[in-house]
Amino acid sequence: MLTVTLTLLLSGCGKNIPAIDPALLQNKLSVLLISKPNLPDTVKTVFTQTLLSWRDNEKISYEWLPDVAALQEQHVNKIQSTAYDYIIVVGNELTAQIQPYASQIPDKKWILLDDAVSVNASQALNDKQIAWKQTGSDFMQQQWDQWVKQEQGMGKTLEWVTTNDRPIPSAWAPSEEAEYISYADAQGWYTPFQNQVKQHGPNWIVVYSPLEASVLQRMKNLPAPIMNMASTSVNVNWSVVLAGVLDQMKKHQLTPGLQNYTLQEIQVNKPQ
Image (cartoon, rainbow, N blue to C red):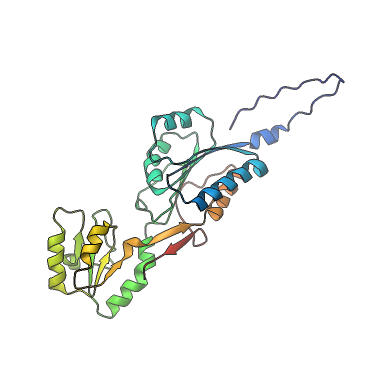
């Protein structure tokens, strides 16, 4: 809580300047917003309007550090030396990087907001001062389960491409079908994968983890269509998300831990 020093002065005509209600001072909040580079202008506009509304209507003081690609020493020093009540972090890369720092600074409340499909959704979060909004550990399975089961139910064969940090859900590709999974982060993976496609003759090549554009282009020469699940994206409804943040701040609360975005908070975009 920011410390405010009040001085009562007597005017020349003998009237006292009214004292500010201590309860109002107790409720005054300070917020630091840290956001990643290259945010769309529409998102910057929402942040600007929201912060100004918080200041004017809720008496919440704020600072905004935009375009932060990586947390630097000066950022850490500023956070440690300033009496922010809440620190809001926007952007998947930043949330993953800042979370370890947040664990070491328990005197502030941290709200980490992913802005894309969350890669680190399965990791544990036990710090009581941190809330982390994500798409959720089972997000991709929820979005694609119907399509996978439909294709498999029709007897179609799926050839999977992913990376070791993004395993295919076991319900889609059980261990006995391991030969139908290729790992794009393995050394020299593409030639064996290419041979497997020719041998298996799959109905679909399913890309589960993001690949370089040049690799995807190369895959188009293989004798199977590509379903690029990895291109699934989300648009965050920042007005709704920040309204929820404000509600917690006004109550001087924080719901800690990993939290999934609701369907009101995100719009999901999937390839057809």
